[in-house]
Image 1: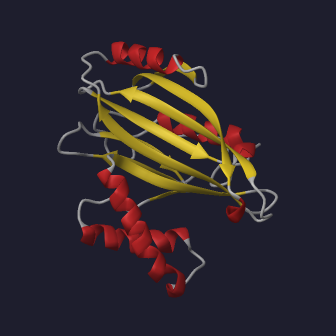
Image 2: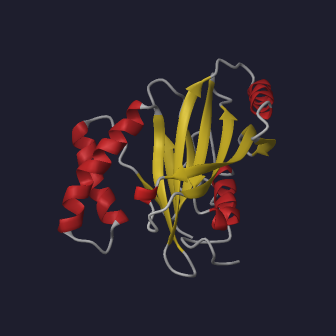
Length: 229
């Protein structure tokens, strides 16, 4: 399986890292417009690998603007997940990583507070996790969205079921919590996306690691959610 070690550094937040598996296409979040423009050009060539300049040139500014919005909204990392289906087509997901200030002095106490808060909503399936990097809390929920007729192929109003997985991990190195979020409407591939998120969070590290020393996740797929099942 191909994977990429992602190291997140900020002037305000202690560094942390995780490994993103093949199939996640990272948006070009960067601090300057010039860097975003350069990265967006690389991004569209990766995302639309079978395309050409006719597709890449108009698409790059859109993704540069989207990356600017993500950066201004406090996201450290954002990616689109594209995975081929056995029956044809693509299973998609959105994956984001964001840090928030939580003012904790003890990550376990912070995780207990997060679990208590999330458990107060009956629509949440909130659970305690013990990860290699420390305590964490997962939260799973499903939402039904009404899609208006003008947005459907049938021309009729439809209901779309979407699922979300969030994992809240308090920093052991500062008063912050990092939140990993995966959203998808491809709920028929829910088990595979759960496996992917589980593999990613196992690799989270708040300590500096030499290149190639981070553990590599081994979910039952490469860039194909159904392979190995």
